[in-house]
Each structure stands twice: as structure tokens, then as C-alpha cells.
Image (tube, rainbow, N blue to C red; front, side):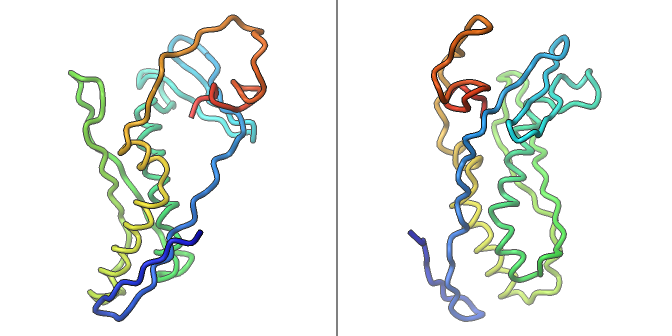
Length: 180
């Protein structure tokens, strides 16, 4: 199903085809402990990331990974809209720098801030491009949509090593037991 709307703008009618929703990989995801409060996250595709507290040095904190996931998702979701207008070689930096509420140990606000050069566009083209980019983010950014909806996070499941997991669960099978 293709989600399309036609918008009348100062630059004329614009058909807005929704950004494609990327299928969620079924590859397993997991973290392994590497030291005191430090972990290495893995995908079955071979990617890895170092995770730990700020004091551990060159690692991402879990909160930083959340922010990076949101920024990257917004960028990927709006990429086609910006590339269509600015060309495939356009440059962008997306920051999510909102502060953590230390008393509640959470991020109450996560704002995606795009640094992107739109100076070559007239006002109508700029406004239309930003409108279509935001629509793409709202429709196709799984991370943002999940955060806005308030995903259910059930209690952790604790198992002995070597536990025979049903197909599709945990690091070997990649289902619901895998981290996301």
C-alpha cells in the first residue's frame, strides 16, 4: 500500500509519497559483558558497539545510544526527501542533545535538530521540503514512533546459560528475547 497525499503549496501541488518503512531485521541482537558495567552490543550481521558508563572512556552510554538511534532514524526517514531537492551528496548533522532528568533518571524530551544547508532554496521550496521531511519522519521513523507511543517494556527474563531457547528467541534465534 502506498500512502500518498497531495498538498497545495506556494510552489504548486506536491504529491507526497510516504518514505518506505524499512522491514525490521530478524537478525538476533545481544550484549555481552566485557567488564564492570561495560558491554559490547552485537548483531548477527557482524556490527558491534561498546557500551558503558561515561567513566569507561570510548563507549556509548545506553542513553546516548537511544539518542543516536532517534537521530539516525530521523535522518534515514527524511533522506529521500532531502536528496530529491538537494542532491544525493547533501550533508547533514542531526543532534539530539536534550538533558536527562536526573531525579527521574529519564529523558523527558528528545528533540531532533537538523543542521542542513537549505540556503539554495527559495522560501516556498524550503517550507515544502521541511514539511515533507517532517511527514516522512512522522510516518517512517520506527524509533520516534515507538517512543511517542510508549512501548511496553515487560520485566526482564533471567535464565541460566545454556538454556535451550525456542526458535526466534535470544541471541541465537533473534526473536522477542533479543534486545532492540
